[in-house]
Amino acid sequence: MKIETVKAPVTASEKRLLDVISKAADRIATFAHLGQREFSIEDVLDELDCGYHDIKRMIRDSAAEILKEKPDISAVVVSDLDLPCQPDITVTIKEEQEMTADEDIGGLSF
Image 1: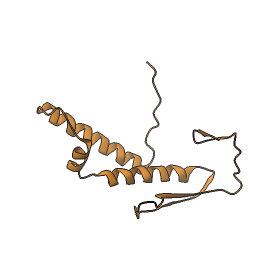
Image 2 (image 1 turned 90 degrees about the vertical axis):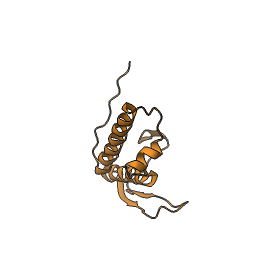
Image 3 (image 1 turned 90 degrees about the horizontal axis):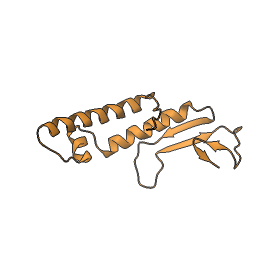
């Protein structure tokens, strides 16, 4: 069995997301002990007063916080408008950071 290393949470948004996941798991475990066997994540999140948009916001904010720490990124702007076909995050790279097609950036090879 291969053991993978998991990055410890470093951003406030990651910590909030992990807290919601932990609370959801605790709630499911409690109801499982009461005889319930099937669960909808949407229902569990609703019971925790946390919906899809809250989860999306936590993921967006976590990504933005991580991007802001990267030395090759000069600006990160987060949009709270949540409009269809509009960006959630706008990123500006530093001008002196020219990448070639053969470089590996953030896990993606170009």
